[in-house]
Image (spheres, rainbow, N blue to C red):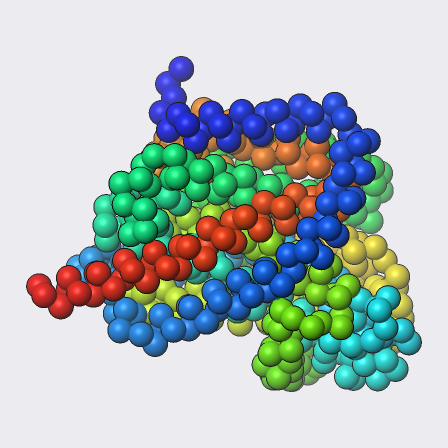
Length: 509
């Protein structure tokens, strides 16, 4: 059949996912009830673990930046980067945060502000972060933006950086296959090629696929809402399913084209369009509030970071479980996909350069994005006195915010295009990564295998939407993210051991 696969990982993960799609499509009602129970149960039980693990990942990255390991070059001392900074950042952003930035850029700041400003802020029923600021609009604005930045700043990028650095180091400096199990060679030795390694890679496939399905489902929700807002396309399960099928079909062309011709080109187009929309909001929106807010909210984030990242004794349980625990599990489930993708395009960077670029620079860009879109929406609510954005559904809030500005039809259409292209780049990048894992680390596996994974990413997103909508998508991401958090903690230990031996080797040569 022209296939080139690593049999245990491909057939175990592929077989289980095929069965999941079949049963989810057959038993939609009971599965909907199950996912409705699963998400709050899992987050209530493991919120402390996810928060602790995420804090460890941030601290580990900071330690590596300032350690002697920072001068180690990925690929050896004579390696040179395969991509320019422009191409590297374009692929990193399109794969790492795309659909989420579009969906939550307006809805999350508005949600946190509304909960913090509400009269019940600080009660057990409230969703406000850190007890909120009932009745104080300015304090609620600062707290809401600090909480938003917390979810899109250092912590997610630290998670991605650890996976990307570990995979790049063991692939380019040790000559091991570009797959998750390779990072555990210092801990497992030759057993990494047996069943312990198979289990690690299968977990990575599940985490990646369900994390991607969550993003694809969210993208379909927002694209459907935008198309309804502009063109009257009905908001329905049928419309969302057709969008997923259609966009997955587009992604197949990029998958077949490969990394340079497909993913890289789409990522650069996406970055240009995203920059255009961001610049429009900054210049046409409340420019002064956005510029000053960037520094004000960054300071608020730093000031509130210890409390927001505290895993124990929280009084804001709804916020902690419903937002933070979900985000950390979602980012962890995305980490095999984003980390491996970053690793594939990061040969030639030093450890320090890699971590600074992957950890700090993208965090600042995410802060700018959230500040721009969040400030524009909050300005409409607080200064202009209109609640249209706050009263809209989450997936529609971006378009309602843009509607209050000039050129609303154009910018809303641009927003829809961005969601769709982010959808495509996530799907094709994820297909390439899953195919690499299931092919035993081969980066040029046959096209039919990539097509298989692209198709099943779309199918999983479809059946999860049918089985409970956004709650089912989030439950799937959380459930697969928790066991993979354990894998990432082990990866930190293996990476430290590998970098230590590399530095010792370099000192003796």
